[in-house]
Image (tube, rainbow, N blue to C red):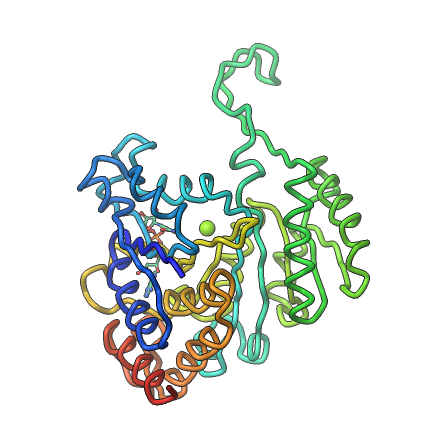
Length: 359
Ligand code: NAI
Ligand code: MG
C-alpha cells in the first residue's frame, strides 16, 4: 500500500499531520513518501507540480492531499499558480470520478444553515465528472467577433462537450455506487436547453439498461439546486457533469454544517485515487492551529475504502470521528454553546485516543 503524501500549503500541512497520526494507529503497513506541491513546491522548486511529485503520485496506489493556494500567489502567471497542481494531478492520473459524500452528523444538525428536521440524518453522495465538460472543452478564448450580435465587439467563449465514453464511465461508477447504497441514482442535466446534456441523458439512460435493480431519475440542474435545499433527504446518489457538480457539491456542503467536515475522493479507472478535504488552504486561519482536521481524516478513511481495500479500517476511522463529536469536542468552525472548543492537534489526538482504545 503505497501512499503519496502531498500536504501542500496553508492549513494543508496542519490537517494532513493529523490524518497521518490516525493512519499510524491502524496496525497496517503503509509505504509512505511525502513531496511538496502547490505554493510550497513553487517556493522550493519553481513549479507547483514538479516532475518528481507527479511521478510519486503516479506510482502510488493513493495520494493523500491537503490543500494548495495562498493569496500571495495570485499575481503569478496562471501555469505557476498553486491551483494548477491539483488540475495537473487530476489530468495526469485521469481522475475522472469525484466522490463527495455530504453527511450531516447527528451532533452537528444545528450547525447547518437549514432547519434541523430537514438535514437530520442526511447522507447523500454527489458523483461529479471531473475531466470533461466546459472546463476542458476546446476551442476557448477571446476574440473580436465580426459577425456576432454586436458587430466587431470583443467576445469570450468556452466549449461544453462530452464524449460517449466519458459519460458511460461516470454513469457506471454512479450505478455501481448506488448498488452499495439505496439503489437510486439521480442524474442531473440541462437536457431541455443544452445538446451536450441531452446526449448525457441519452447515454446515462442506455447505461442504465445494465442496472435494472437500480432506480434512475433525471432532473434539470435548476430543479436539483432547489430540491437540495427543499428536501435533500429524498436524494441519494447524484451524478452530474463537471460544472453542475462543482456548484451542487458546494451547495450540498453547506447542508452539513461546515466545509471542515467534508472529505472527497477522485478516482480513475484503476481505482487509484486522490483523497483530499473539500475545502482549500484557508489562508485566513493557517498557522493558528484551529483548522478542523476531520475532513482530511475522513478523506483518509475513503482512501482506505476505495484504493487500499481496507473497509474495516475505514469504518474504524469513521466511528472514531463520530465518537469525538459525541464527546462534544468541536473545532471553531463547528463550535456551539455547550460543547468543548479544541484546536487542530487536540481534535487529532482525540481521534487517535479513540482508535487506540478500540484497537
Ligand atoms: P477555503 O476552503 O480555503 O476557505 C473558505 C473558508 O472556510 C475560510 O473562511 C476558511 O477559514 C474556512 N475553512 C476552510 N477549511 C477549514 C477547516 N478545515 N477548518 C475550519 N475552517 C475552514 O476557500 P477559499 O478561501 O476560497 O480559498 C483559499 C485558497 O485555497 C485559495 O488560494 C484557493 O484557490 C485554494 N483552494 C484550494 C483547493 C484545493 O486545494 N483543492 C480547493 C479550494 C480552494
Ligand atoms: Mg468548487
